[in-house]
Amino acid sequence: MAERFAIIVHSNARRPDRRIRLPVLNLDWWSRFVSPQASAPIGISSPFGRAEGWLFFLNYDLAQLRDLPTARLLKRTIHAGEKASRLGARIIGLGAPLLQALGSAALAVARNLDSTVTGGAGCAVAAAIDGLWKAAELMEIDPEEAAVLIIGAAEPCGSACAQILARDGVNYLTLVDTDRARLDQLARRVLYDCGVACKISARAGQAVAQADLIIAAGEAAGFALHPALIKSGAVVCNLSAADELTARIISCRSDVMIFDQSVLRLPGGVVLCHDPALPADAVRAPMAEAVLLALEGRFDRYFLGYGLRVEKLIQMRRLSRKHGFTLSGFAALDRYFNFAAVRAIRKGRPA
Image (cartoon, rainbow, N blue to C red; front, side, top):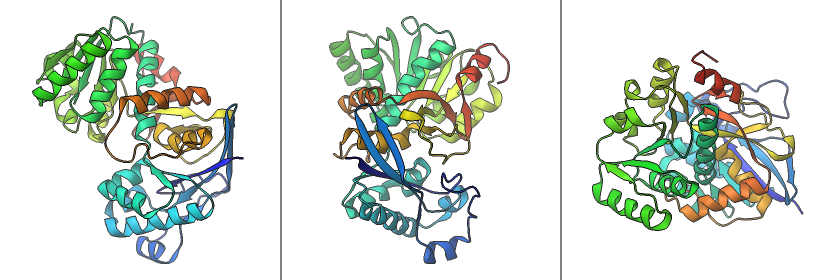
């Protein structure tokens, strides 16, 4: 029996069951009188499971999403979740822009629905680390010899990344954060668990200039990571939600590879067609989490809050590989980079 999932997204940018995009209507009228719309059922299968699901569209563009009062957006999201639950969805994913607009109110969505709700952070971070390794390969960086820097390492995301990278075989790992006590604790844990001696620092400048691979994980990473200091040919993974950092690096450093999210190809070539910036059979990693957990038949509460457990991230990587989710490319804001585009960055010419 196929388990059922749903993903609630802000707009109907490319609905798989329509040839013509529905207009985004007046915000007040649409939100008050029109119910969230569902796509046609989407069937997905892997050698180890089957799932069926829907995309639910709130039909707000990004500007409207940012301006909408939180209470109204929360009500609309819960309404969409209730419709998904009535269709039998046991796990419901929230699209990244919607999750960001809801902020802490996303927890209220979970409290008001019987179905499990996930924001996709687990799959996003696990896929980002795999994406970092693939980008390093494409940029001809040897992971065992690379200088790896994590800015915001004392934050939950940065701490989890440090531990997984050390387990993956990184030998030269530098941790930067303003919280020295937590950095010391993390460095001791990495040394004890993985045998990797980390450098720790409260200042990012010199470490940025020497780093081959950089993860920006903390809220302050956008201020600590100055584009001019980044080493030519480096790879930057921006998990800090600081969009302006990505925009600055793209605009002034054509010799640096930067991405915010890994893009995954769904098993069986299934087409969602939601994001016009991506290939039809691909999704950003956070959206893939609800699909992946439905295929596995796992409905425990994973990654709605901000806590990230290393064991869960490792399990998410294992499940992704088990069910045949493969890396398709990289996303930076509204841009998509396939592998050829990354090689072009390495060669010093625009993609």
